[in-house]
Length: 370
Image (tube, rainbow, N blue to C red; front, side, top):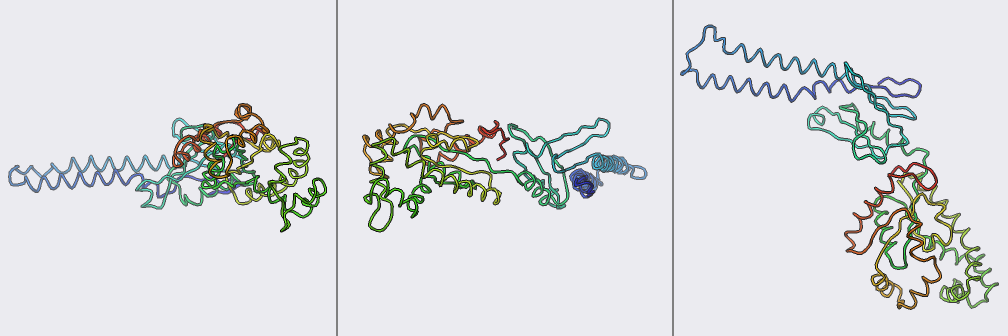
């Protein structure tokens, strides 16, 4: 493989000639052996020809076919040129009419290794590349040597130095945002639970001291932790107190979130998921590339919060009244997942939503690359 100025330039492997000719050779051997067998069986019946010349014609035809196939694969092998540099993947092919396909690394959506039986036997493989928004293979490196290493090089190049896609989750209370987050976690996305992070921030000594100064020692429990029920009663009753709490907590949560996004980037994860109850209210959607809205019927949400949080319908309505209306959240989101079926059906819906998201530019003008 030639290496010049940071570029990899190579042809299909020499063994590809044998691998791609093997099927034709095998069939010709089978046909020739069959003809020989038929002659052996029918020999006593069919009178022998002078010089037994019946055998020469089939052998000649089969030999011509084999030679033609091998010569064709030799020509094809040397006509195909593949390159990869810091910006592009290319595939050039054709003898009389040359075709060159270019795919910017920044546009690569997926690279996979496909191996026929013959390629597996000869230690080769074909790498197929698709781009964002495409439903077909955009570029293929056919029958290349060391296919696993070449695939790894493409995957590394398409993620190196690129921040992961940040997906925010929005939806009504009890809609199943955490269930969607678990599905994405199973797909190697890093899930950031902003609610848990905010609760952890509340227990910091410096934050507890400020809360006690504002609202008295009643908001601190005997074991030195934040009394979340007492705090909730205050902030849900007085919007100005809620704004004061958010001005204290949100910057600390944001700093921790940014550190986790950097961690996800270093780990090569495809994306980060922000499971934030107040995504729009806190302005966290501005840090997202996409927002996914989780839709669920009101009755289903009420049952979930009753079972998991002990809230009745009145408490659910009271909590949601302090938030941006669901219709507005839905309008400001990029796509919707309807969580109205059994848990096992949710993964397919999430994957469909991701496919829709990754065909469009992100909110911050980046190209999505799952």
